Image (cartoon, rainbow, N blue to C red; front, top):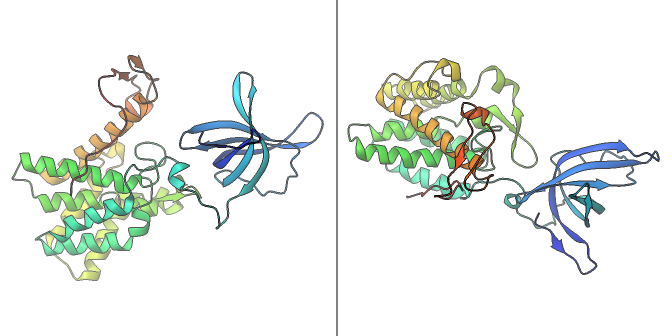
Length: 321
C-alpha cells in the first residue's frame, strides 16, 4: 500500500475503510476490525481500545498512522491514530480507489467535439442536450456495480472506448450511418447516472429503487423522448435512438426490451459486449502470473482464462480525437 514512512518507524497515509466492524476483545474492550485499501491493494487493520462512538463506517476515507505487523503470516496494520479526512487534506481520490486511466473531463470534451461536428441537427441537439444534463455524473460515475468498468470515471471511459471501436467499424463499412451509430453509443448507458447509487468513494454501492424497478435501458429511452419533446424534434431519429438504447443488451435474457432490428443497433450491441468482455478478460488475467490460469470467471461463462504473457494485460485504449 502507498504509505509514507516516518522517522519514528511508523507510517501514515490516506485509505478507504473497505470493512469496518466494531468487536469485543477477550478482555471485554472494544476494537475496530478493519480492512483498509488504496489503489495499490488492501490490508487487515486493527484499532485497539476503541471507544465506540460511531465515528467510522465502511467506505469512509480516513487518514491513519501506525505500523505494519505480522499476524498469522500476513501483514496487519496496527493503528495508532485515525481520523476522517477534512477539507484541508490534500489527496487524490484516484490514488485510493480503482479509477479510469484517462480523466473524465478530457474524454467528455473529446465526445462533445465529435458531436459538434455532426451534420444531422436532430441527432446533434438530442445528444448535446442529454450530455449537458448529466455531465457531472457522466464524467465521474462507474459503468457498473461490480463487473466491467466498475471504477471511478468508468462510464465515460467505456463510452469513449466504444466510440473508438465504432469509428473503426465505420471506416471498414462505409454504408453505416456514422452519426446515428455514434449517437447510440454515446447515449446507450447515460441513464446509469440515474440507475446507480455511489458512495463516498465514487464507486457504485447499489441500485436506486427506480433503477431496480425500471433500469437504465428504459430510462435511457425516456431521456431521449423527453429531450426530443423539449427540443421540438419529431423526426424518426428519435425512435431509432430509443430502439438502440432499448436493444443494446442484445437479447431479453440479458435485459434487452427488444432485439436490435437495424444495422447500427446491431453494431452497438456487439461493440458494447466486446468492450465489456475485453475489459473483464484483461482485469482477470492481470491478477495472475504469465503462463497461468485465472479462477473461473462466472461473468464469462464460468471459464478459466489463460494469461499467455505475450501482451500487456493492463486495460488501455488508444483514444484519438
